[in-house]
Image (spheres, rainbow, N blue to C red):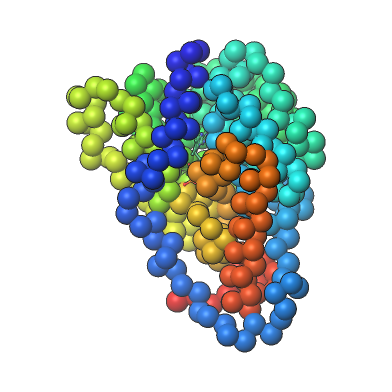
Length: 333
Ligand SMILES: Cc1cc2nc3c(=O)[nH]c(=O)nc-3n(C[C@H](O)[C@H](O)[C@H](O)COP(=O)(O)O)c2cc1C
């Protein structure tokens, strides 16, 4: 277990380094809204309110899943959860595997009594340990939903990562049928495309978080941690593996129009949030941008959320969108 704790601490330190963000442009800049210099509304009248999992949220973004299970993980989660509660913004937890395997208390619900909280486990953990683990992940934090992450490239590069991905889809399907809360299947930065999204939908999954290329690169982070020359040589061509969030969103939306879609992977400000919504996402998620504020204080996370909301409001004003449903139709180039 010390191994997991050290790995998680490494992840936090490395995720803060700019060299582990995608080195090529995320492509978000390619999407331009047609400017509307006649907004015909007051900035303060714009409504960012949205619905997620049948609840009202202040704006269409959530705190993306970030690690727990290391020495300062509790404090990070406390700051994120307090801010989520204060701002009515949902929070996805990082992997609960370490806490569940060590039987540690997970206190997050205490800091966010009414916020939407999403549990998190790796798909291979569920494949190996079954539905019971998924139920415990949900019950231990009274989660409103469970996120299941798919990270095959990260597992290949990670020393001793999981390499047997047989029956993973079946394990997800079992959760979709048996759990009482919705499940959301996500990647971690390489993306989920239309073919996989269809398989997930057919397995009963109602929500997909694309987590495409463009932001935090887990291949880059795990390569940095891998001391084996041979494994580094094998992994090198895959450093940029995956597809950009901005390409994946319209493709998944077109292939699976009834699937709930969360745009993520390289979302860095409120204008990117607006772009994801315009391309078919109901919600968006940002992970790495919340990490530095979360290490500081709940107030710093609240401040970050307020900046994101103001940027989204500006994007809506400049496209003449009074609410999120107008933004979905805003003209683009
Ligand atoms: C420090 C850190 C830890 C993460 N831990 C998890 C995790 O435990 N489970 C998970 O599903 N995703 C995890 N992620 C991946 C993010 O949820 C997200 O999919 C990915 O970082 C891409 O989004 P970003 O570019 O906004 O960071 C983590 C990300 C960061 C930065």
